[in-house]
Image 1 (tube, rainbow, N blue to C red):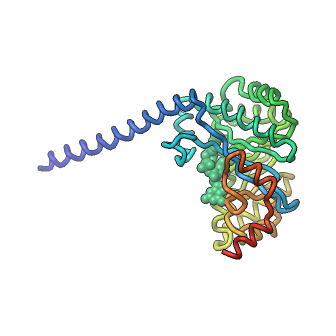
Image 2 (cartoon, helix red, strand yellow):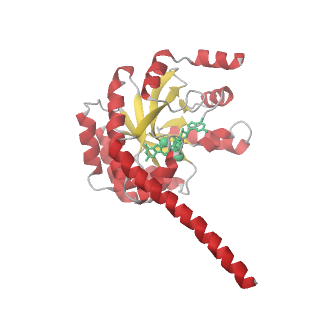
Image 3 (tube, rainbow, N blue to C red):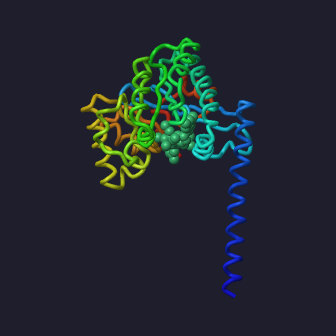
Length: 286
Ligand code: C2E
Ligand code: MG
Ligand code: MG
Ligand code: MG
């Protein structure tokens, strides 16, 4: 009896595993097709200055413009693309698209930041290719920033630092993304060529209800000030969080309160029309 039970369990397990593999394989085939058809689109999420009261930049976030995958989280297919190196081709398409958008928005005096995968950056020749594409769009210095995470840096510390320094000298700002969520020590901060720290959404989420989150936010802001770094708060979703961050001296915020990631055309409309006053009044009425 026991034997049968065991066997049936094993069979069930196999089927689930098989389905999982199939889904991954299917997605891998779809990814290859998507690269050929250029189905990836960069959406732009606004970043707002609490000091100058205007939109000062956007984070470019990838979306898979295909009915089946439009709502799939990029985390799902980016990690798959990293495991089979398809991220190299995807990353190249992302660079072209993002630089083209940055060029088109040049007159607004904004900066666009893009997420770079460690697999992409560790590729030989990455910095040269980046700079070459950048120049081919005739972009001014400081038009583009790149976002890297703490875990990212741990993959190959020395080499990554060397590459980041090259890009920084070229005129690209480096943001440390999802700060405070990795397992790294604060000691490494002084080795890093970074210009700004992004406070992770998870701290903002509990900023008003939890004293630890609030203390960590204040700690990051003061750390950044003392190191002459900019701070960007991620995941700001309402006016209360916005006011708290502004009061705490956080100069730049990003989150659904200001706007979700949107298509390029909508970002242009937003740049022409956005006003925080209008936004908070509209919310009050609701
Ligand atoms: P990330 O770089 O930390 O991006 C921020 C994520 O938080 C985005 O999710 C964004 O839509 C979401 N977010 C922003 N504000 C709010 C808010 O107020 N509330 C909530 N609930 N969420 C907010 P998204 O676009 O799904 O991206 C997830 C992750 O996928 C990114 O995290 C990044 O690690 C990766 N990713 C996205 N685009 C790219 C890309 O072009 N290249 C690479 N290598 N990775 C990318
Ligand atoms: Mg990011
Ligand atoms: Mg982030
Ligand atoms: Mg993230």
